[in-house]
Length: 140
Picture 1: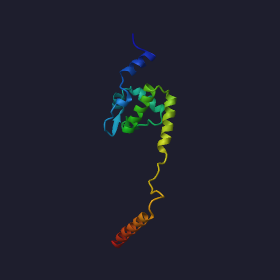
Picture 2 (picture 1 turned 60 degrees about the vertical axis):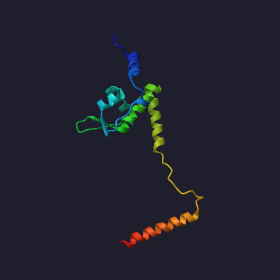
Picture 3 (picture 1 turned 90 degrees about the horizontal axis):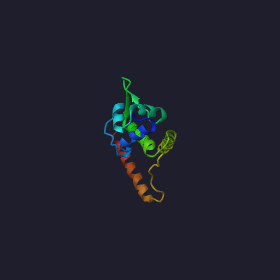
Picture 4 (picture 1 turned 45 degrees about the horizontal axis):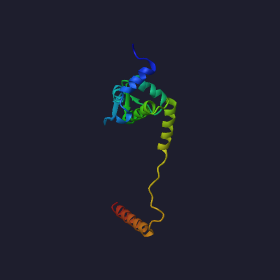
């Protein structure tokens, strides 16, 4: 008797490696079959996830085949971990990835010299830059 529904899904999950244990090869592009084998997911699941998660947008080759970048594969592994290992629903995982994406896009702090820095160091730096500028302008 074939496995159906929840029993089949549980059997598939039992055979899969955890997402943390999967090593993504150092390649520029992957085809859907490669990603399917690498992530232990059927191709139809990958195509479905593309409709549910805006982060999963592989480009298409001239022949119309999906071409995944390394970042796409890493995102798929992240989604797989959220859904299969951590028990998130699709909408919950989508929301979590959306909030993580917002945090990643935030501007990082620019390096600066602390206000308490020694003023003589700043003057020396300024003088050094003026000397470099003088050398460069003399060469013209």
